[in-house]
Length: 316
Image (cartoon, rainbow, N blue to C red):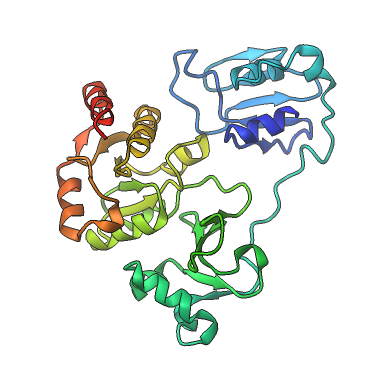
């Protein structure tokens, strides 16, 4: 394993420096230790040839930067000799492949009457997703791609419309895993502050839940999905432009615990609130009225709320 593998395992994005093929940039891991706000602008650079690293945000610097980065990420089994002997080849530092839609991708609303798409269309409608949402979010199917066969395709795009990846959701009940993401996908689904006058975003775990919330609030506030119950530096960067993140967790213990971790990580970057009272059902199992009530009753995230919810976990 090399430092790039470890960074990837920890959800860290690496960007190449176009000035020197041996230099790379990450969001700094040391800003918090140096008393600065978390870096989300890739201000920390390191050189795999010289080993020197420096952050332009907090001022951290080291002549053994790769070793320090590895140890900060929890790679205690690495020692200096191992790091220095790591073969940094063109393969290990190559740029990511261009993200593309699955082979044979078709917009579902255009194919809803075709035999090949009928089951997929019926599944989408059974989950409450409207035709308007299918069109807006470019939800589709993949006719020829074996990886995404029998799955609803949810494209994940940035605010400018650039494709970042895709999420495939099994609609037959026979494909495992139920969700299959394109390689390297670590963004927030539907995080677009440009479309809404209120720069708020409601964050839930899954896409279908985020679409249920979107319907309940009549698309007046951005409803996005974390595609899980954790955040990475890349996901934090997706929230740039928003003023408040409203967390809408799953009702089980794992969901609450995971979103408390999300709240703690986000609170230094953005105003964070939690829906209240905490839901007893999944968002897509709640009525629109129930969804609106817990959003309207949201409470600012703080240490007192954190402790209260830790107590709540014990009773679920």
